[in-house]
Picture 1 (cartoon, rainbow, N blue to C red):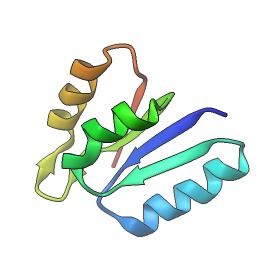
Picture 2: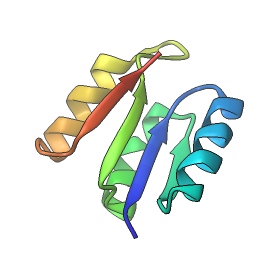
Picture 3: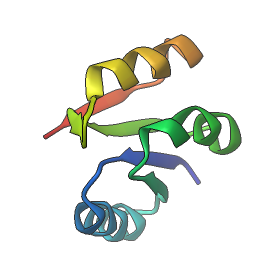
Length: 80
């Protein structure tokens, strides 16, 4: 089963996306904390990431750079 990592500061959106993607057969992990991203990438080895462009006070593009430093081939979809 492929894992999708959702990174968004809106808990309700994370839960909604989790329900939709789970029904489609994906395993979903999500976080509202940009500081947790690297540990989740290492622990969960997701197949793709859904990344909010603005995560609280953090710029999603900064998080995107961290993700691609960890795995430059990991697909990332930016959402707003």
